[in-house]
Amino acid sequence: MKPVPYDPELEPGLAAFLDLVERIPLRADTILVNRAHFATIVPPVEQVVGDRPVEVEDRTVPGPPGAPDVVVTVVRPRGGVVDAPAIYSVHGGGMVLGNRFFGLDGLIDDVLRFGAVGVSVEYRLAPEHPAPAAVEDCYAGLVWLAANAVELGVDPTRIVVTGASAGGGLSAGVALLARDRGGPALAGQVLMCPMLDDRNETVSTRQYDGLGAWDRNNNDTAWDAILGPLRFTDEASPYQVPARMGDLSGLPPAYVDVGAAEIFRDEAVAYASRIWATGGQAELHVWAGGYHGFAGFSPTAEVSRAAEAARLSFLRRVLR
Image 1 (cartoon, rainbow, N blue to C red):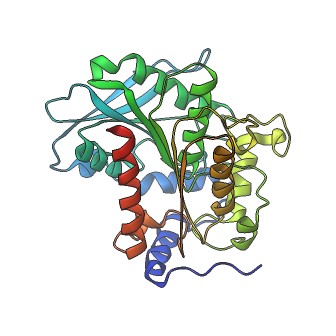
Image 2: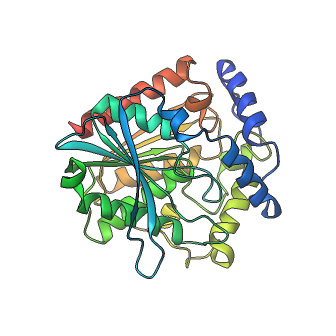
């Protein structure tokens, strides 16, 4: 099946991504090796913060019932804030790689842009901790954020959950849990190139079988680790696999962003379409020639600048 071509301006960034991140194919027997390598490419917090005027602290907060506590990193403008919006960030990595510092640089940027409080959550990874451990950890962190909003300087009516790739899928799952458990209320959900469906059978997954920044083989490896024998069955948790949720009504406004040249294109489009079908609000962007996570590794490309402007526009509208 012929793939959609990449935007030529993005190709150097894709090559850099593959050289830096995907040196060893992600398979069941290489998850731990890849995880160790991934940890080496996430810069230290001090380096990420630099001289930017923010305060960064770690908090240990209650985890899901019967599960370990959860660690979150809180980022605030120096000197503190009052009644500020909050950006609750969930990291990517296929739910098998990464930590809460992956993407911290962008979170700090948003904290300073919006005068916001940022919270990045550390969740348990598969296969050691299969579903629904990750999404339950993420939800527990959100509950803590909302319950401690006043102390953190947060307006509890202006909390947005956001994430890319696995973080996008988990953000969608957190929004579903918040709906079904009666809160916390969310002002919006920002789902960047979200990992939503374990079935891995769309046209776009087959177009990028062996190609791109996160291919069909990586996706199979990750979902096998996350779901084990529940994969491909109706017993898989719809909170960890949001595409399996039968009812997408009653959700906060969703921003869904994906490249046209990546495996998650079709499931992202389907998810937004299903939200619209319920009368819900979703803003969908499919960026021509975009590979998985293109804006992060090709930030100066014209399409990346357009994608970033659209994301910030959505945040300004839901956080005002």
